[in-house]
Amino acid sequence: MRKLKKMLILFGASLFFFISFGPTSADADLYKYIDKKGTIHFTDSYESIPPEYRDQINIIKEPSQTSSKPVEGQAEKEIKEIEELKKKEAALRAAQEKEAQEREAQERKLKARQEKEKQIEEIRRQIEAKQSEQRTLYSNPLLVRDRNQFLLLNQEINGLYQQIQVLQSELDAEQ
Figure 1: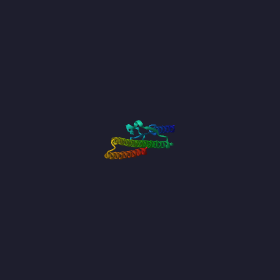
Figure 2 (figure 1 turned 90 degrees about the vertical axis):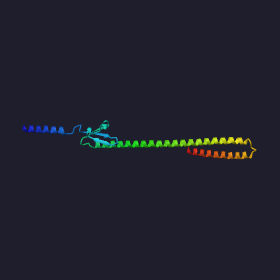
Figure 3 (figure 1 turned 180 degrees about the horizontal axis):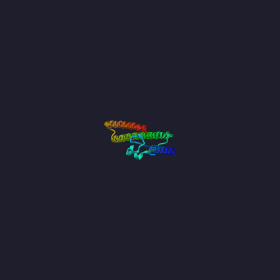
Figure 4 (figure 1 turned 135 degrees about the vertical axis):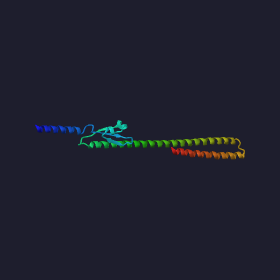
């Protein structure tokens, strides 16, 4: 009977210690959060998590002693997912920057084209003015001075037509 009492006392004491000091469900939780810099943090204490990150924590249940690999694999998987997201964001930013540069280049080309078209229009106005002046001179063909002036105007008009041809060929080359 004494042996039985001692065994019961030992069994009760060991049961008490096992329950008191053994793992509990609160001890088994791991918390994961990501700070503003993108650094991943793991902790087993909820109190150690800064308050601004407590709304985005992930609770990871600690597996039993025999299966510790899945948690490590899960953490690595999440790290890879975050890295992939960062790569996708960087690629998206690069594509947006490239698109913006292409848009700017197109705008510059359009402005250059419009400027050349304005130059052509201005040259055409000059041609019209010189042709009008030629018509005035043509009405009096007997004067030598007027004939020389008529020929000079003709040369200037031809030079202006050549300028238009150069500008027009540049515009055609841009397309």
